[in-house]
Image (cartoon, rainbow, N blue to C red; front, side):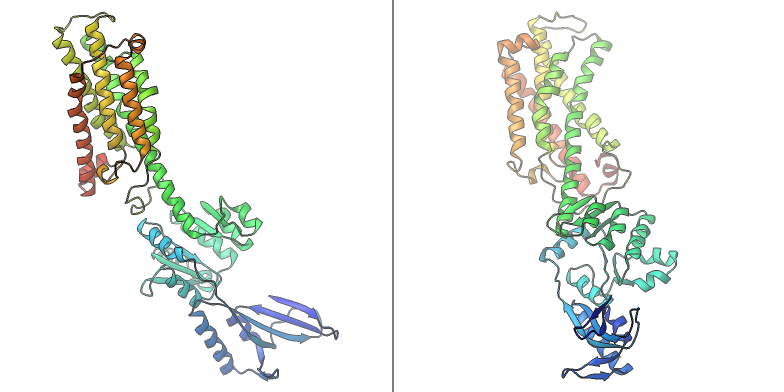
Length: 470
């Protein structure tokens, strides 16, 4: 950058600042320590550039300064007097190294794009753990302009890349190159020159202290200007996505014991094991708080050790539906029917016999079915707290909302069974405690089956991963 100034004596002087390798080549002389001016030959220019490189290796950002006197207002490209270097130390935040390490384990590729000298960029990249000298790929702006599309695509596959001495147009080009390779690109920046790349990235992130143009172009603004915040946001996003799936698999599992009673009622002429009012009691009552509590779960230990999910991955996947409808749901339905028939047969009922809605035996039988489903759902909410890890590794009190949700289930169940007003509303009847205990082994079975599923997933058993990894 050149700036033309007029001195108090009325003379015109042009002051120059910029990249050392450019500025030094534009200088024919230098200012010595005594204030005198002496000529610069090629050897001395190279010596200045070597000094610049020694500073750059320390991670300093170097700007060269020069000036000359002029006679008229125009652009000048030579005969400058070299003044010196300014070394700027802008160390990375201490947490940047840990954040980049998290990205690597999470399958997220971190690429540095900077206008700094390649040596400075390499030093900073090593300092933050972006790469070591063995696998670091450094591409300069000049190389970027000359490489073919095929060569660029090949070099972009390197896990550790630094782009140095890049222009604003080249930053945009880099974003577009990664997108063309099918990558989902997040671009961060703070200056006006970063705005085009931020705007065109899949996710644009601007620093809170950045320019208005950068903030307007961004999808997200970091108020603390901290790269680690982006990584924390990724972790939080993965946790939320996991928790939504946990919520869904928990809710869907109870659909099977709600649907099968109607099928049995139609096909086998059984007294309806689960009337509508009890289905509503589950969907709008007992399931509500536990499902909400699953949304409060912390991320599992491997949450940032998994690769990013595919762009086309849906929330409702076949393995999730299979787990809910073909694994957990049937166990709950079997538990319900077992308790239902236990009450009926003990009361002297025979197949084909119809029971009136106000028949005490029928009221007890549907109460037993309902109770078995609730007891299994209590086991299900525990099982659904994790997708891959053992639920026993999470700690009983790590999510107190789950315990509150389970307590609400038990209270609602007790209210519906033993409260006379609730008996009238739901057509239920007080139930002997032994019929509740009958359902407990099925709840333990449900929890055990899901723990086995998670164990086999952690062992990378292929068919379990294919059909039961949700």
